[in-house]
Image (cartoon, rainbow, N blue to C red; front, top):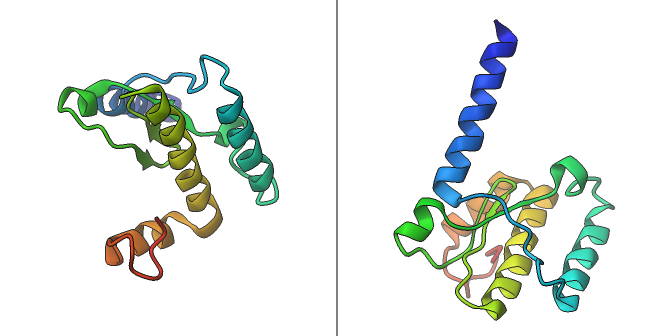
Length: 130
């Protein structure tokens, strides 16, 4: 019974992430050198923390409900990173930017990062994690 509940819970979570953020995709399908180098640099920095790779690596998503409503800003929700493709430059920048937020959450904790953004929502306020 416990295995069935766990499987159902996992399937529900995966389906909800796909509905909201869209299916997973490879953010570097065109093998862009700058994106590869930026992601590799961040991954090597975060190996010091011991997370952010293998099963903890971010999942890049595009599409879903957010694209249907015209949402064109990236979002980090746990390890699910919503990266809209409005242009190739935006895809590269958004991939690196949201990946950095994911690594910030690993390093300083999600509550600290999101709390700073909530209470210091202005980009120019000292202490903001943006």
